[in-house]
Amino acid sequence: MSRKKKHEHVNHERWLVSYADFITLLFAFFVVLFASSQADKKKQSQVAAAMQSAFTPLGSFESHSKTPAITENSPPQVVTKPAAMPLPFPPAGSTHLEETQARIDSLLRTQTAGGGIPPGSVSTRITPEGLVVSLNEIGFFASGSSEVRPAAIALLSALAASLPDAPLRIEGHTDNVPIHTMQYATNWELSTARASAIARLLLEHGSITPANLSAAGYAEFHPVASNTTEEGRSRNRRVDIILLRGRGPG
Image (tube, rainbow, N blue to C red):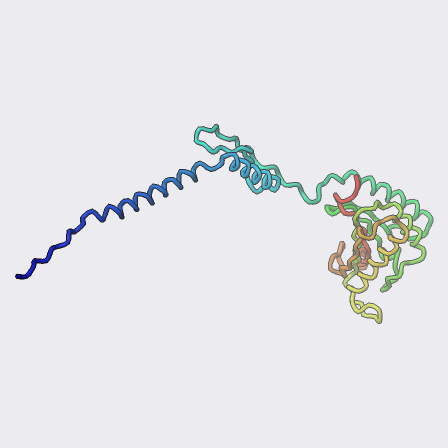
């Protein structure tokens, strides 16, 4: 007789293992969320205060309390406008410029009274950039030359001694009449050479720090008068000494 095969018992509860694993993972997930929500609030406040203090001086963000509200029950913070950024060239030196201008004007009256240079060869004015001492060509250079006239050395020496040790820019300017000589191919070279000559004399006869001094030539492209008349062209042939505003003492 043949034996009947026994049928194996089918386990219908194996799904419980997978379900238990799923419940365990879900519990771990909520534990992580809970732990994240309980981060160190004191450290968060310190980080927020540090960022606020770093960006407020630049005016990049609005000014808030150094301990920003983290909970819903915290009182509302007062928002104020950020402080305006300071200008790079504050007008605080205006009084100093006016005093320097008065001193230089007195010096020029004394020097020109001696007949060393023609009257009207030097003038001063205050501009948004600073105090400008304008040296006209007729009193300081021969036509087409960058060599300073010997009669002007005494005035330039006294001027150098009266200038403060503050940033100066020396600018050479010409009229629009072209020049082409063995020494100067264009007005660019002539204006730059004249500015350099004045800068060298100021360094030799004054107490100006070389790092505070710069020289540049602008040829005929920064006129102060029309080049259609001889008088206007004469005014344009000049060297300007500019005591820059807001960078000196006082």
